[in-house]
Length: 181
Image 1 (tube, rainbow, N blue to C red):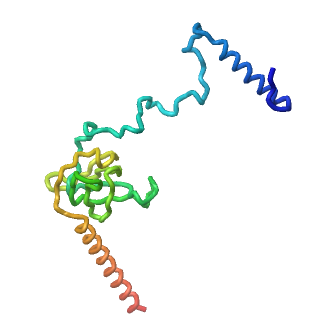
Image 2 (cartoon, helix red, strand yellow):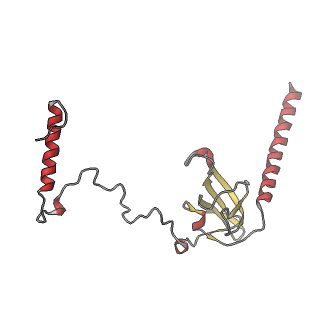
Image 3 (cartoon, rainbow, N blue to C red):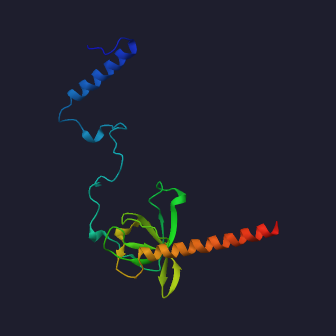
């Protein structure tokens, strides 16, 4: 009998290992494999047995759900940690171009890659925005058809104009407050 360690506890552990080894070594083909108990390390971490992390899908797995100019989408900005509420954005889509890594032109001027998960929350139907119970999925999984003529420069100009209006409003409030004092 081989003992590992110098105290009684170590010899008990060594004895347990030896017994487990002998049981495994004495196993023959007549063992009922279905009745063997598994410990926590033998249980798979996921039930997705057929999951292949190298397979990112193909074009046939794309949704029929389109993203169109005028739709309002929600996404988490990639510059924040995933799930950080400060990164949650709701923006209008100005244009769609299915070619390239950044297929959407957004009203806030942000550029997001095609693997960013977005959700349509409002869609343009007959000229009106209607609530939509979308689900998050990567942009490349949506049906993307080139529409809209806006460019990223147009979106940035819109954002700059919006910031200018905010600054003018705040400056007016500040002037009024200064004159009142």
